[in-house]
Structures are given as C-alpha cells and as structure tokens.
Length: 243
Image (cartoon, rainbow, N blue to C red; front, side, top):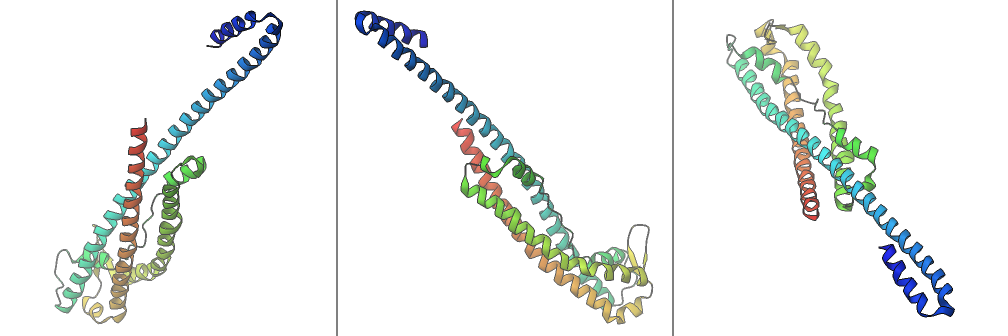
C-alpha cells in the first residue's frame, strides 16, 4: 500500500518540476507517518485481542470456581437439614427411653455437629487478582466480584469462628460420655445418666442454633454466588457475540 502511495506522489511531483523536490520530501514524511500509524494500529489491535483472551480465560476460571463453591454450599445445606433431623431423633429417643435403636449412634454424633467448617475456594479470585482487576472491562461486574469475595465470603469466614469455639468442648464430651463404634457411630456409656445431663441438652441446643445461623449464612452466600455467576455468564455471552 505504501508503494502505491509513493507512485502517486512521484507522479504529482513530476507534474510540477520546481516543486518536485519539496513534494518528494513531504511525501516521504507523510509515508513514514502513515506507516507508523498503521504499525501502531496493528500493534494496539493485537494487544487488545490478547487482553480480551486473558480476560475471557480469567472469568471462565472464576466461573468454574464459583460453580464448585455452589456445589459445596448446596451439599452443606443439605447436610445441615439432615443433622437437624438427627437432633430431633436423639431428643425424642431420650424422652421415650429408646436405647436399642440401631441407627441412634449416627444421630448422636450428627446432632452435635454445627457445621462451622465450610471452606470456600478463592483460587479463581486470587488468579484474577494476580492478573489485575483492570483486565475486566465491565466495571459493574468487577465491583460485584470483589464484593462477593471480600465481603460476603469474608463475613462468612469470620462468623465460623463462633462455631469453632464450641468444637473442643463437644469433642471432649463425646470422648468422656460416649463409646465410638467401628462405623464412627457414638453410643452413650450410660443412657440414663445422659438423659438427665442438662449439659448434653445444652450442647444439642447450641449446635442446633448454630446450624440454623450457618444455614442462613450459607444460603446468603449461595444466592450471591449464583447471582454473580449469572452476571459472568451474561458477560461471556456478550463476548462471544462480539467475536
């Protein structure tokens, strides 16, 4: 293309001999400038395309990470619901003096678990931080992602410290008052004494309150994660359409 412009410039210069050399010099300058602009344009386009590929890979990785977290939270919520039933079964068994229920051993254990041990993955988010948030063009999506990990997930992590404080007491109580079976079940050493132990009732009630609290926390995290994941999927859909 530059050769084509050069031929036109020479023709114009030859038509007016006195101005030939001036036109020739100006033409050379124009050609150099055009060449630089074209080179810069191509380079900018290549950089833009490279950034878009990096951006797409980053949010795909983040989306996959969120899907794993969603599965984790959903399983934890389902487990809490089952353990709430275990607590009811244990209390009913004690009140009715049902000492020979075959499955009671598993329920004793799960009735005392508060499920304050959910660890959500931040691998996709940390990868995005290493790349740099500026790679994301969608400012709203960027803010939502940061808020999810730095606010919602962080609050969840902090709240779990409350549940962790009770775990040592629960574990010690199980060791002192229960016999652990080969199937990881727990049966009381003395059923009648356990039925009169107010501390045991307190452990069950606290575990149930904590499970209810964490259920709300996990459901909130689940809703937020699904919402942000949908925003990412929408963004990926727009990116695919642009290409």
